[in-house]
Each structure stands twice: as C-alpha cells, then as structure tokens.
Length: 177
Image (cartoon, rainbow, N blue to C red; front, side, top):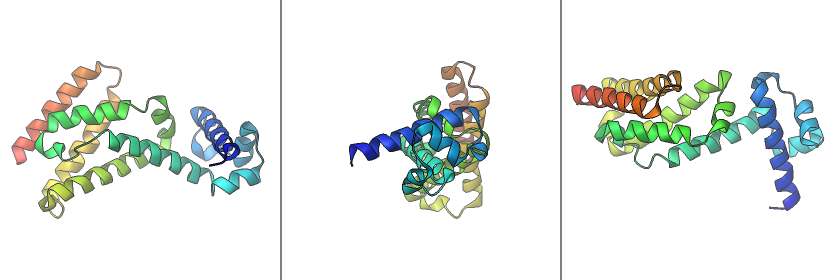
C-alpha cells in the first residue's frame, strides 16, 4: 500500500479515536473528523462509507484480536475456569482502544459479535449444542454474564474476579453437563 494512503488512514483513525474518546459516535461529524485528520471530506469517503463504516472496521479488528487470543473457545465447555481466564485476558489486551471503541451504544455490538463468534466455534466442536435451547441459553449466560460481571468489577483485583467467575462457570457447566 502507498505510504501516503497509509498515513492518511492512520490520520483518520487517530482523529476518530481522539474524537471518540470524548464523544459518542452519533455526535461525530465527517467534517469534524476530516479537519482533525487534515484531510478533506472527499478523501474520507474514498476510504469509508460513513463514520459507522470506519468504526465497524476498527471494531472488527479489535474483536479479531480478542478472538485470536482465545485459542480454544470450546474450553468454555471442557474447562470453563481456564476459558474465563483466557477471555478476560483477551478483553484486557487491546487496552484503552477497546474501551474507546466499545463505549456507549457500541458496547452491545461487541458483546453480540463476541457471543456469535464464540458460539460458532463451540458449535463446530459440539454440534449437539446448536439446537438445544438449554445449552444455548447456558452459553449465552456464561458469555454475557461473565463479560458484564467482569466489566462491573474491573476496579477489583483481576485475578480474584477471574477466579470467582471461573468457579461460577465451572459449577454451572458441571450442574448441567
């Protein structure tokens, strides 16, 4: 890729992150982003359809990073305690960019995509889970519940929270399977 194109995209992304740090995505305008990135609006539109397209591309990269840090999503079934530790570690790895991209209304987007991707991996390993409502609900509960519980207790010691959530997950999986 041309260095000028790379620099332009980096400027757009950096400007978006700066704006997103202080504003919800719905309040960011292309004009404002373009001025901050030192480009004209037409240049923005050669790279992205709109502000949501830019955000979605960055979100997809962040989610891909998280999923790559979960080498065995099926461990949710086989070894839930280990899986919880891997998930939380994967969620912490992207750092501040993760919190910026998925703040406000975008938090639900992250959770939906993560759940969908994790379940797809689990269904490949355990096809009997796919059309079993009880198992699907259990997976949703563990994925979403663990995610929300961790986020609402981020100020606590991470290892303690990971251990407690891992114990809960293990108990639930043993109870049902």
